[in-house]
Image (cartoon, rainbow, N blue to C red):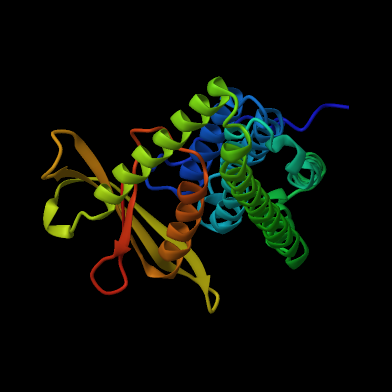
Length: 305
C-alpha cells in the first residue's frame, strides 16, 4: 500500500501569495521539524509529528480552491505542533526531564496517527470519486474532524502545562535541598566551594534580571517594523482577524545592541503572548537572553527580547 505522502494527480499551480495562511502554516511546521532535529531528548517525537503535519498540509496546498476553505483547519493543526515544539524545547533543556514527558509523547503519537489516517482518507477520496475536492472539503470541515483536533490541542496543552509544573516543582525542591545542604557540607571545602559558586551565579543572574526589568518604555525606542502576523479566526461563521503580532527593531538606551519588540493585540494575540510568556518564564535561558513583559497602550502587550 502506498504511504500517504502525496496525491496521484499532477499538481495544479496554486496562486502564490506570501500572505496565504496555509503557506505560512506549512513554513511554521517545517520550522518545527528543524527544531526537532536539533533537540537531544524530545526531538524524535517533535520531528515525527511535525513531519506528518507537513505531509498533510502540503497535500492540501496542491489545490487552488483550498486556500480559503481549510486555512482555519491548517492553523489549528499548526497550533498543536507549536505547542509540542515548545514543550520539546522545555524537555530538552532539562537533563532529567524525560521522566515527565511520557504523557506528551503518547499524545503526540495519537495525534500523528490521526493526521496520517486523515491524509489517507483524503488520498482515497481523490483516487476514487468525481468532484473529489467537494468531498474532501466536506470531510475536513466536518464536526468530527474539527472536534478531534480541538480535543488533541487541549490534551497537548494540558500535558505541556503539567510538564512545566513538574519541572518548576523539581527546581524548587532542588533549591530547597541546596539551602539545607550548605550547612551539612561545611566540612567538605571542595563541595562548599562548588555550592558557593552556584549561589553566586544565581545571585548575579538575578541581579541582571532585576536591572533589566527596571527598564521603562522611555528607554526603549522602536524603529522599523520587522514583520507583521495577522491572526484569523471564525466568529459567527465568518473568518475575521482576531489578533495581530507585530515585531519591531528597537534600540535600548543602556545597550549598543539592536533588540526586538513584539507587540500583541486582540484576543488571539493575547493568547499567543500567554503561550510565549509561559515558555520564556519557565524554560532555562541563555545567559544573554532576557525578556521584559508589561502592558502597552490599551489592549496591546509588548514582549522585549
